[in-house]
Length: 484
Image (cartoon, rainbow, N blue to C red):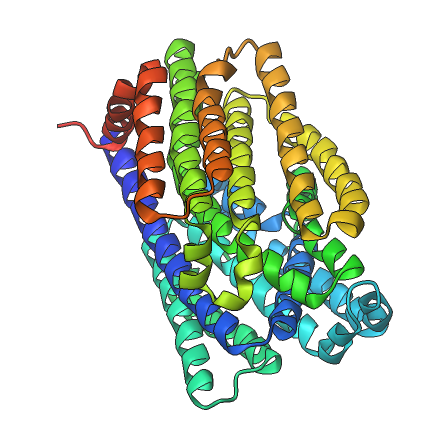
């Protein structure tokens, strides 16, 4: 790996991370304002519509976003005359038209399975996922062309524009679900306009019809599409099931409790952005011993770091809900730390999955996600009608526990030896301390801080590699830095 590539990769990672963090920041402030200005049922309806639009965006994507990145980044001079960009754009347009017509003609009947009020916005939903789909496609184009600074610029400006529009309509006293939907249409359209100005189309060859090219694109995209659908089920199936069995208010409470874990999930992707390519290089270079060290140390770091945030969210759950949202959502205070615990389990599972893919076992995540999705749906259908949103959370915890166990089986089968007792120590310690605090029931800030500091101190005693965490981060950063 030459110095030029290292510097390019490092700068791209920094730009993408800055864009992600900025987007998360403005998104959180926007949600804070919406939860304070909208009734729960209206906020729940807004969340449900966004999930529907996101689902159609994934279905209409056909796995072509990642396919586009792969084909653009891998094109050579010999292949330039058959660029993947225009075939993918054509496929996207045709399939989105089909989905749009489907929504218009049968959407009224489908809306009865979640909430009848969705039918009032059927004409706007196709426009929303059309705009979101092409925005994501052009983001992928910038990514494939390695225009990371432009990517981050559009991402930041879009998040700022969305936030400012929400503030303006709040000040005018006009904020409503319909206005929010108009914003969700207007901002992506502005993003598309900016992307079209920033994409260096001179690097994209003119369109030439090639049946072989179309076939290759579809064949490559099918497994990615399947995995995207499975990920969608894992991420958002509970929203639909809650909408079917419970109320819009329950959707609002569940989504508010999940906002903090969602933010940490996006930050976790920044870690994967560095972890995955570096681990892949170690395996491809035959440096298996160092790869195993990175895997085990990363699992320990993730377990300790996220368990700390889980414990913090448990101790200060009420304060977090009131600070970030409002007192009317205090019923989400118990769901928050449990969803953070779910994020911890899923982050460990995803790290295992990326480790297997980097070692060449790319089919494993699809198998695991398939089984996990079935577990989640069955668990949710059984638990949500009985336990409400807590049933949804228990189903997620069960799914990610099962997922982690299956990944451990495949890692062992592949000869990748991970040490579960070591990376699970911080998690078990956190659960024990949380249980002790809950039994004592002393709601004093100083007492909470004592428990939190005790967790860190005890982790230092029981984790042998605690002193190596700093060295691990330093080595990863050094791996990205250009040599002197």
